[in-house]
View 1 (cartoon, rainbow, N blue to C red):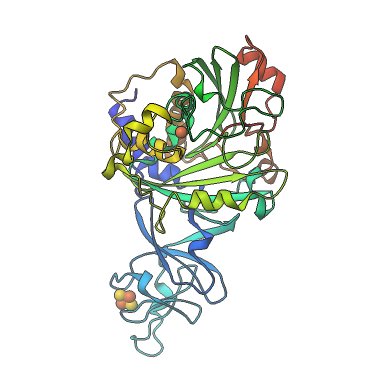
View 2 (cartoon, helix red, strand yellow; view 1 turned 180 degrees about the horizontal axis):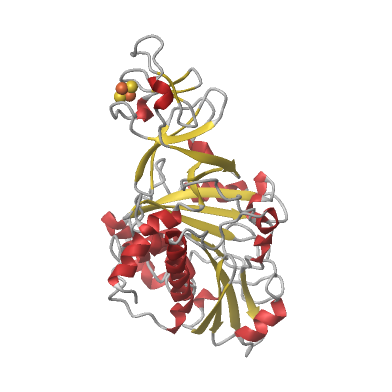
Length: 431
Ligand code: FES
Ligand SMILES: [Fe+2]
């Protein structure tokens, strides 16, 4: 449970809000590279409550500028890409990717007024098919060199999806590990079950059709966020799942197209405004290229605007017959749809003063505490956690460890942690 004021701090993201100022201290995904093909048109965007336009100039440099022209406010996303920047259609003011006003053709010859205009402009960094931006003050921090960004392009999959709720609900859905055993279950005999019933060692690969398990959850703070261990006892076996909250709005969890032990999934929940967000999903496989069918299948989950045809307005097309035979939720086999139901139906901004957190929510509570401390850090002019300034810290991020595996019955989380150490690699088995 949070006090109403704390909930406000964490969920208001606009310029000048304490939470928004904290979020602006980190690099965040703004768009997919496929949305900005070379020679393509400017793209209007909304991030952290700000209207923006992203474009590539004639030399291919990326710009992210305030949407409304500094002259009299026309929408720059309708502008012309020419002469080294983007030109407003209304009176021809020309801006480069740094927000400098290069020309004001309607002003008297020799005017230097354009030199005094500084249009809002944010730094961009393109990697792995994703365009990240830094929207905070001062020198941007170093870019975190996650394992995801170190593999060849063919080993990686990226996508984004629109969500109709606060970013915090989306991200807390990833921190919450126990929901996987319920919301995402396939029923015995489900037509959606994978054909691979056993993993390489003959163990059940996906224990979702076991009877409902008992679980225990423990967590520990790290330099990048919170590492969460979830232990699930079913009738047949014990499973350990390790997930990571990466401050401020990302989680690294088992999933994606890689086979067991060969990669994992990172989800960034980036605010569009207080009540909508993009979930940028990025997954990778260490050992080699991904099956292109995976990207194709996942892309078909959303339309060309990255919205799901199953959404809140149509109750996620829940099918009560499917719920009897195939899935626990009755919303098809795709996890992100089920996640959208869980997070969006809590309201545009969940009222956390009315919730009742349980023992299994320890990781979530720890993540909130860390974020509230990060807000205080920024208010007191300190870098919050995981803002990287030293090159050697860019490479400490393999400590983001993701697992989902069967362990000997009776293993405690303390034993597991010691066995694995704190810097072990990912060995996930779940989708
Ligand atoms: S409003 Fe853009 S140039 Fe006048
Ligand atoms: Fe989920």
